[in-house]
Image (cartoon, rainbow, N blue to C red; front, side, top):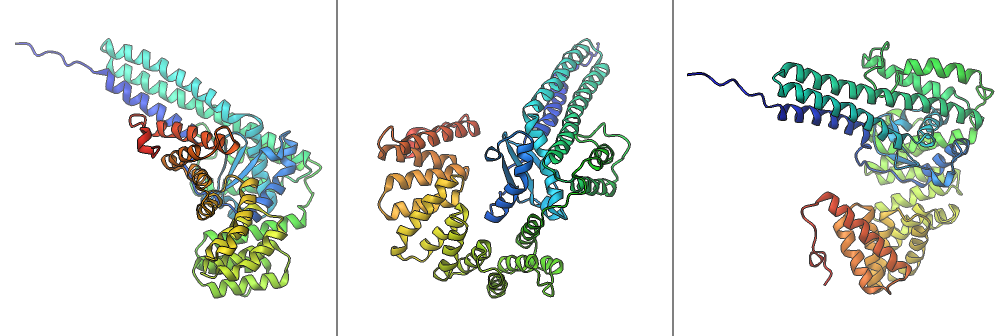
Length: 470
């Protein structure tokens, strides 16, 4: 009786290795998972002013480039979605000055201007091509009985593909470094901050014991490599000794301090900004820290001291109004928020906060003013889900059901609640004149929501009756 020779099943081996490669490339290609976006009127104005000369130097239009702040403690920034630069809050807190952040922005704009998000796909396609070739050769070897050799081919192919992809990424990073240096030079901004920030990253690499002699397995060049190349460029540039505008630097220190007070534990804030420190940034940080820690009286005292020093500063007024509102005193918040809205020329984020305070008073006589300020807010910034939700409430109270549905659809669409967005968009379409601007907007939301639902649950398509379209 003979014992049959074992049959090698190469299918699972090929599948596991191919999945490993594609998963590895997917991690590199996919933008960072959804994170909390931090919206603040003062911070957004500062980032816009800091980046404008760099955007223009890159040959881009400032109104088309958006700097988005994410709540994330890591020191990172990246580009996604075309001309959108995402910055982590940890990067702002780690920076010593505005010039360092400008260096980071310049680098990220190099990715935008170079079209690296699109070209990253080209690198992945090339790497995948290497992988597929190795899969075919390796599978053939396994099928012919050379199991070990086949697995070796598959492994080598995966390694080659990943190595090729990482090499492609390092080339893009080096290109963005040089482009960023060019933008800083053309804008007359010193490269000192850029070098200082790379040195900070290098110190992190030292702490993590990352070898400094080989960047083969990395998506980015080693910081030491980047510093040696950029130092020569920056030091020879006419703008090397140009100081940062003092007003811009003062604004940056304010924003950094308020961000510190907002995202860090209040005890950490008091260590960084002790009460003996009576500077504007320190008081700003403590006001946010006390407010977040539910000490409204202490927060109000700090905010009031800031207003007494600068009574026409809209952001100090906004802060005190926010503290009063979120402490259950909406009526008391109205004077500060009205002044802040006026002094900021109807900044949409501040206007939305005023609208919220007017609604929170539960005084029907305030609804008309609330509707006006919220309409202005969404006209100037239609990406604020909070403002749309408040506006939907007002339309509902006024009996305008069609626009209440539309505003709620806008809110749900921005909040990623696709089923809710589709339901309300369809309800709005039934109650608004077909072909009107609002009807077309509702149709757009419905189409976008349907596509999102299909992507998320392709096997469970919603029927119209499930979505409330009777």
